[in-house]
Image 1 (cartoon, rainbow, N blue to C red):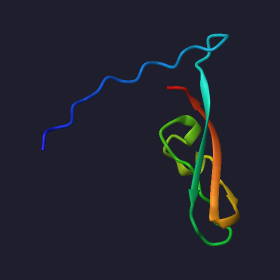
Image 2 (image 1 turned 90 degrees about the horizontal axis):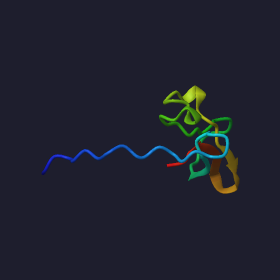
Image 3 (image 1 turned 180 degrees about the vertical axis):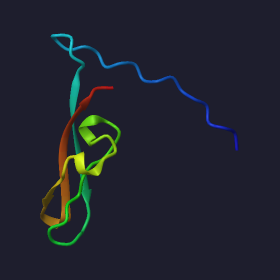
Image 4 (image 1 turned 30 degrees about the vertical axis):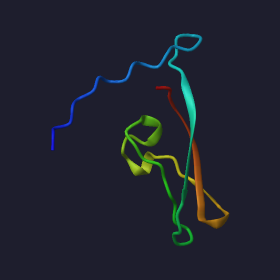
Length: 77
């Protein structure tokens, strides 16, 4: 198997009015059954996703059929 070829980092998000980086709303959905009182979180490297710290990650909201969802603002790009 050939080694992976590194790729260039993504271009920075375009600046919005006022010079701030553009953001997008990202909706996460998952169907997962767990015990009553448990929580499901979206964790990742972005600060809005807790920076890989589950205690700082956004908690998802439970819905019928064990469907969980969360909407998070993340940098575009």
